[in-house]
Amino acid sequence: MSSKPSSEPIFNVPAVVTATIALIAIVHGVRELVFAPLDDRRFLLLFAFIPARYEPSLLDGAWPGGPAADIWSFVTYSVIHGDLLHLGINTVWLLAFGSPVARRFGTWRYLAFFAATAAAGAAVHLAMHLGDRVVMVGASAAISGFMAAAMRFAFQRHGPLGLFGADDPAAYRVPAAPLRLVLRDGRVLAFIIVWFGVNLLFGLGSVSLDGGGEAIAWEAHIGGFLAGLVAFALFDPVGSGSDRKPTTP
Image (cartoon, rainbow, N blue to C red; front, side, top):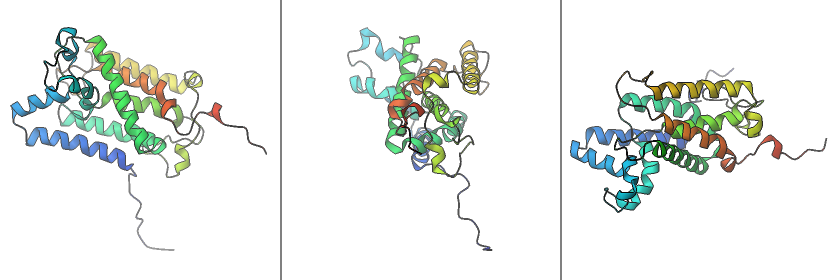
């Protein structure tokens, strides 16, 4: 028997997820360590999501960045975080749910899915808070989309159920359950009910992640989650069980 120590990493995180977390950490580090307060304010006005930007009377370039920022802030807000606790919590959830989706989707589909669910979360938040001048930041909407996407295949037979999944790549390539069957699975329904319940508590102000007074953008979480659940098939390179062709024995 070989006495050579194993070279396998403890957590085999996809490179694109590591890069996402690194980008989020760098953005936060620059804001905290490099920017003066005025610089940080300008940065937030350019890249955070601010519903007041989209008031019909203000869609004339009055906000910094003009029409371009009106578009990119639907996604760029997701790499900005309020504090280290906010960043740390989202990092843990991104590792847990972004990793299996990245293994299944690959780099470019993962990035497109991240952007799409972040934008969907911002759109729902905008619909509920039009005219609000409070900035929204954080990757939670995209992470909620990854949660929903993981549910489409993680509960399937031979699918990945561990936090960081199995070593076998085939575990991430099992056919996804069609949406109509996902919504009949008791385990999935229980997860959805608990998840929506927690977000409603956030919205009613009964629960706070950090004990502080900052509001939770729970509408964005729900928007990202629903987008991830429904749009999963548009990004999935594997397909659902119903798409499989019968094999000849």
